Length: 399
Length: 212
Image 1 (tube, rainbow over the protein chains, first blue to last red):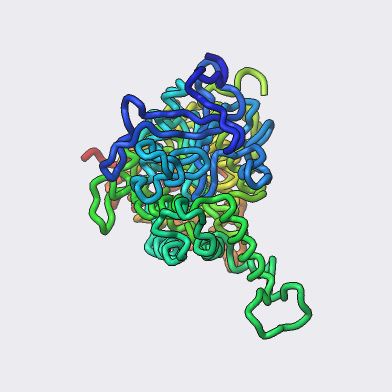
Image 2 (image 1 turned 135 degrees about the vertical axis):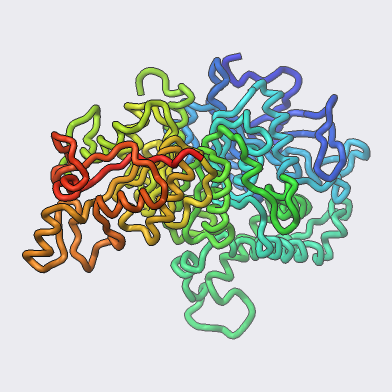
């Protein structure tokens, strides 16, 4: 197989979630989740770009963040906006789809075609809701590994992602070291901090306390917990930015008015901006999915997986003997996954004598910088990926 | 700064070339204070080493990674503790020892991480240094010591004799010592200890631990 040929009869093109494919996995061997439940069959929706080479050695898996999805480099079917990593992925770009076969799948628990709480429970035909089992970052990665098996891709040239995507990258390197030639965890951590769990809990509480949530059974009430999910998004969105970026963008500017009106409409531009973020988010994201995926991030603690205690295990043990080439990236103004958390990953990789590069990018754009036009990030990632491609023999004869 | 010589596809400083000559092909190398990665790139290309770098300036790190080198931001004084014992065949510290807070513990770390350490430093016993201090009465400035006293990063300068004594006291075996002249080139003749300490502007050492 020299291209991304679909296996006939197994992949369905699904229009409601936009371009890409959806595959049913786990029919014979279910996905054994960390919570102990066996899930199967289940769906994974994914997009691919570029072509798989004859050696099957040029595959790059992109792992999306909390509210991302598989639409990396195509127009989003719901919002009509460009793909979320179009800055990085495409012909001639850093992740060059002329050279690499790029895969991105919607995480298990997601709401863009992969099995999750909004999906129909095959036993009842109704949405899973809170009957969907709790999932973890490792479950997401195991599901992706099953997708690769289905696609006949033995190993990845590179696995890359930011934020929760970075957590999946670390999990890939720990769970499947032999299947990752290179790994690029960006703006993430090897465990979710107490502060980050706290922010997630605020968001979840906003959803729980929305009367339209109906204990997760809102579909049968023909409603959605619009307000709760919007508030969750607003609170979270602040953590993705930085004080400097907010100040630069909005300062104390007033919204459509010359002077203060002494009322509770959006007086300040920043309020209006956040309300817009909240209200558009609910149009594309399922509230229960938000609960499940934030939970998965909270559970993430790679050192603890290595048999550590709650107080902290041996993170280096997760990478012992790894031959994967790592490039860890952080941003100076990211206070959600600060440089210190990323450096802890680097220290563990050094202790495991792994091959690691680490760059900190100077920017005032906060955590979301990994999604934005950051030339310094592009330059260093290009150097890293091209260097790895050279080592893997993907650069061919001429350049 | 030292004069570059043409070597392969890139210019590389003479003192770096001397270090490169000490490295066995195909070995594992950690370059502490790797700057823009010139030595690492040379070693990867000419000697097929598996190289890693540590550099204190983030701009230098980013430049290295953009060149496809494995480099992290870090500091010789604080970031060597993370590495396991004997993780590398060579741990290199080029013209940086004199700028560390604790040169002795850095030296110990290099020889813990690397089976060998390659260390170079500006020799404060060099005759021009001695002459400037003795005759001029001012802090010396030479090609190897090119910043004025109020701007220099160098806080632990030493002479070749000082360094020999430290190695002896630490039980470190000096496998090779090269005195480098003011142009960064190896002296044509092999200098004895006292002569090296006078005529060597810099020194490059190949060190190893005493067998346990």
